[in-house]
Every structure is written in structure tokens, then in C-alpha cells.
Image (cartoon, rainbow, N blue to C red; front, side, top):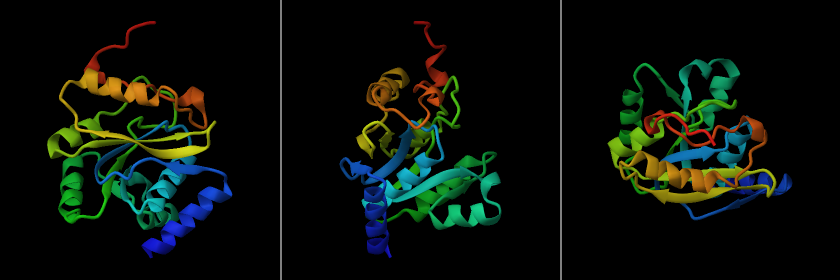
Length: 193
């Protein structure tokens, strides 16, 4: 099945004239941005399948109903109980033992609409588990979806987020006006330009 899935993903990307790029990450917390459309999920899924990577995308449990719930489960999404997220993470980590590439995927922007801050769950998970953070992206003008840098958080939230800001500065989503620039509440209020 993984070989068939890889070929289907490659053909699908080629059919829509998108290309997958970047170094294959091993294990970690995946942050994908810009997140301004439901197509982001489809492209990220195809990216993972192209490289043979199992992405366990955390999705709020309220979405796991009817046909959508079935589809989410079949594509590797994991129900996140937002009242007890640590239990979900612990279960995922216990199931992830082995050498196969594996990523916990999080839409750090939290919504497809423009907001003020990103959700800090990806950062806390990486710090608490010792897993590195892998940046994934899509860029509509270049029709590229791919893997960016992987790094371990240093604990200096501002410096670590500066890495994300620099990386995502030239990436454009499907609806650019809805992109929330990378900033966590933990950094304090945004400075006015």
C-alpha cells in the first residue's frame, strides 16, 4: 500500500502541476503554513505520501463525524480531545516506536482565517517530548509544497519563532490575506510597524 500511495501522490501532484521539494524529515512535530485553505491539508497529505512519511495530523475531535470522520481517519488524522491533549500525545508517542519516518502534524495557525497569534501547542509538544520541529510549507505562486528546516527548540521562544518568521516570509498561501504571521502569545504583544 505505501508504494501505491506514493505513486498516486506523485501522479496527483504532477497532474495539478505542483512539485514536492525538500529533505525527508525523520521524526518530529510538523508545523505547516501558510494555512489559509482546505487545499493545504490535501497538499500536505500528498507531500507526506510522496516521501513515504506517516503524518499524524491532530484534528479537533468534533470534526470526526459521518463521512468526514471516516475520511480523516483513513488519511491518518488523529482525534484531539482539546480538554486533555496530553493523553492524545502520549498515546501517539507510544504507538510511534520504531524507525519509520513519523510526524505529529499541527496547523499552528489554528484557523484558515487571519488571527493575531499562532497556537503554541507545537512548541510545547516539541519541548516536552524532545522531538524536533520540522517546518512544512506550500507556496501557491511557485506551485511548490515541501519540507523546510528541522530544528530543536532552544527555549528562547522569540529566537525560535524568528526562525519560523524568516522561513515563512516568502511563502504565499491560497488566500494570502488570511495568513497569520508566526507569533506566539508567549512572545508578548506584537510591535507596531
